[in-house]
Amino acid sequence: MDMMVTLGVDAHKKSHTIVATDPAGARLGQYSTPATPAGHLRALQWATERYGQRRWAIENCRHVSRRFEADLLTAGEVVVLVPPKMMANQRQGARTHGKSDPIDALTIARAALREPELPHARLEGPERDIRLLVDYRDTLITERTRLQNRLRWRLHELAPGYDPPAGSLDRTKVLNQIDELLTHHHSVVAQLARNEVTHIRELTSQAKTIEHQLTALVTQVAPSLLTIPGCGILTAAKLIGEAADITRFRSRNAYAMWNGTAPIPVWSANPTRVRLHRGGNRQTNAALHRIAITQLRIHPDAKRFITRRRTQGNTTTEALRALKRHLSDVTYRTLTHDATNQQPKAA
Image (cartoon, rainbow, N blue to C red):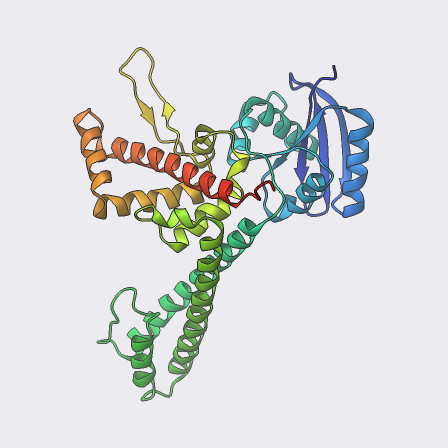
């Protein structure tokens, strides 16, 4: 029987470098191809002619690697995604010095061999639309925050006694008050402030439109997520978009390792201790953290969970970490339940 060959791919905008390895991580072959549909086809032909059983390991670089992933999946290939954070540790422990595309491709293949439960790539679905909308809304909010910070300095110069409450510079009532205040000023500073107010209004309107789109998509894809206390539309959209099809994870433990809520053991001949896992998908980790913090304020079960862990000897930080791990399992079960219900039933 043919051995399983892992093909590590170092993806770039203009070219992709592929290194094939055996199950022990030894290099078998190397190939470079342009990052075009024709180049992707030639890479697939090269791999098909030489290796029977194979899988592709690609560093998860979002837009850079997405088209190659899609072409491979369309051809029926198996593709696993290697988190970029994992690559840093793998490069530090590599025996090969320096940095080049072949070295990076080999490192990606060996990282996939070392971690057998990496998530598999899937063809795009509504989860990708959710992720794109969430990312774009984040961009709008970041730009709006910059404008709001600059506007505050303009107002401090024009009217030193006027200080809008924190977090209020996206409210229509407050922006109308600023417009009224600026009518009495005719300097360049006032002109720039008026432009910034107009731009803030536009960005707020766009962000609200995207929130309406996300509400419809989240309700369609994973409505059960919204039943988790502390999980609103934006947090649910972040969880769905980052997971990009929960069925690609083999288990709840694999999902926890991917999102960074699985703790890391840090003891030797001492009482059992674990520490925070700083790897994994930080966007999903942050979303779970927001749910945990909200539940500590409003959810009796979460309060009892923390109290129980504290009585068992955990610090507050350790108890919160355990709550996030629990929420990771809840999220995995909920997303899996919704994904199963959405699968077409046999006639």
